[in-house]
Amino acid sequence: MSAFEEFLHLLQKTMEKPENFGIFHVCFLMLTAVSAVLLICFFRNGSEKTVRRLLLGVWFILVFLEVYKQLVFSMYVENEVATWDYQWYAFPFQFCSTPLYALPFIIFLKDGWLRRSFMLFFTGFSMFAGIAVMMYPNDVFIPMIGINIQTMIHHGSQVAIGAFLVAYGRKHFKLKYLAGSLLIFVCFASVAMLLNEGVHDMIVNRGLDDQFNMFYISPHYPCTLPVLSIVYDKMPYAVFLPVYLLGFSFISAVFFYIEKGIISLSSTLSEKVRGAKAA
Image 1 (cartoon, rainbow, N blue to C red):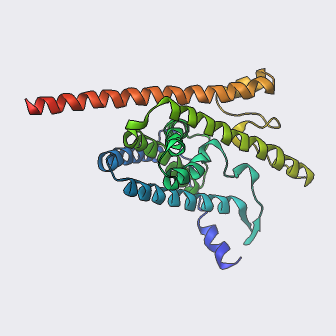
Image 2: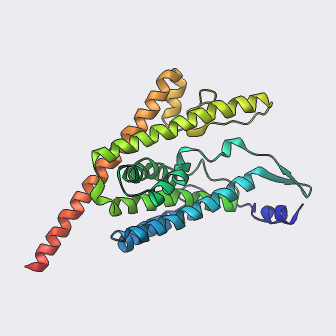
Image 3: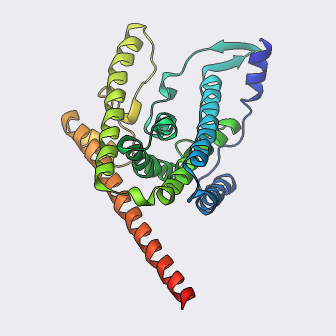
């Protein structure tokens, strides 16, 4: 093995697969909650420049950890010999991978409709995906220390940054931005569909047995997501896909109105506190 391969092999150290709500899981749940609270407390009124730099730092961390994930999943060692074989199922364009692509738009775009739509995409779709995995991480935990840490940081950041963006963008929770976030979701899903078809053909042509199912909407492989897996099994694909898109869009809309209600309640309580102090 080369020095790089030996170093990478060190990063493949194993552990017992963590249990749901075991010590490992609970520690990261607490870390996520604390991170969200600290971000909201210290940066909800931060300048645009400060917030952009903060999000850029988070994005660099997520990208670095994703590169690590791709490398360790692509190399395995047997008898001190390293073999490289890319695992197409781990390609970074799943629903939970969208922060890697959405954050740069929030960081670098001029403030306006598109940037605020991406912010609502993050507080809806991305935050929901992060919460779902953080509350039930059984499918993402494996017996590898580094990957378990990576997945908890990745999905935990979706929750913490999502909560922070609710507080930071509290003045911009409007229907036109919600509509923009739904359009962004459809665009991401469309890219996933194109990738599913193109890469599937390539895999078949090369005689590989890899599965490639981005967003779990490929017509070639079963959807394994809770609830939607039942829809996939019981209904034709032409029904499953609209149900998938409408279902996630509905959840995002629910998040929008819940967050909007929290913002309104928080504003009312703040006004009452200021009024009590003035009196």
